[in-house]
Image 1 (tube, rainbow, N blue to C red):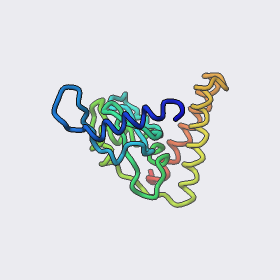
Image 2 (cartoon, one colour):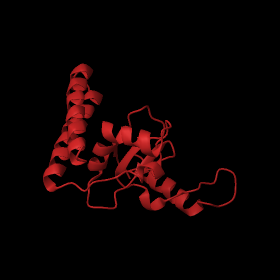
Image 3 (cartoon, helix red, strand yellow):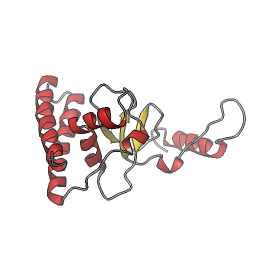
Image 4 (cartoon, rainbow, N blue to C red):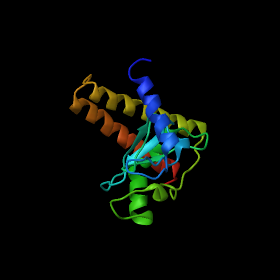
Length: 167
């Protein structure tokens, strides 16, 4: 097989076969049904403003909180809500005012089901924001230019979220 794929398959097989066996260095696999699924995640420790991102397929660990959508709503919609100033303030004032934002905190968020029109607004904001971040990492555009674009999208996102929640 190519590019270490066989080695990866063998490693995963070892983890699955030996999970929970007693002995030093033996693996413990938790929640394997979520391995190699796309979802969204965020870092456990945050400043005032929460920031989430789309999580590509892979294995996750405790430092990056991960959730996987069980509804028809796309992951980028949840990421958009979590990345808004409103949700950050809501979490800080009503759910958890520490620097930690964990899975059980996220489960308490009031999620509004958007209309198709509202969902499209969030999709457009997400597409442009993700593209700007990718452009930064690939050096396709300057960081300053990308930050200006992202700041504008953040303002647009915050307004869309306030409208969604009728605030």
